[in-house]
Image 1 (cartoon, one colour):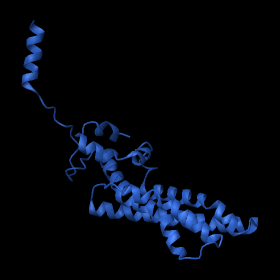
Image 2 (tube, rainbow, N blue to C red; image 1 turned 120 degrees about the horizontal axis):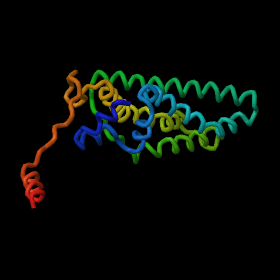
Image 3 (spheres, rainbow, N blue to C red; image 1 turned 30 degrees about the horizontal axis):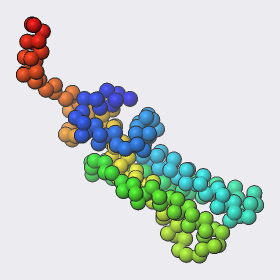
Image 4 (cartoon, one colour; image 1 turned 90 degrees about the vertical axis):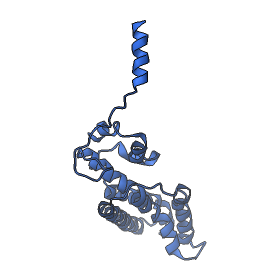
Length: 195
């Protein structure tokens, strides 16, 4: 993780852009190979599918033969779709070279819970209203976060890892931020040392 050495040399605004918020900083702790946007997408798909254990059990009336097959197929589908969305985001960010954006947290964070509640009501046949909307609420936040925030941030981290300056768009090796010398401060320190 040689990018950690380079990040301390960045100006504060650029350092904050690379490090991001609390969720991004959790992923930053992982090695870059494991935190690829496709893998983070697969993780999101797995988390969503694990949240569906109880609704699927209720839907299959807890018949073990039906339940595990339905769960396995849905898990594979969700992991594959979320992983593909992460990979597409990584490719598009590699082409566009855009910087990370702050995702609309107030909108994205409650969406999976709303989608899970909606889908649960659909599966238990309490509500019968546009099941596609429930799946969209459940699935959309992960790929949106990855596309807006994590894939561009991962690109910056990869560039820092390869010793390339990500903010100038060139392939020159990353150079340390120049040290600013305050002559007046040095003069005061020198005078203080003489006394």
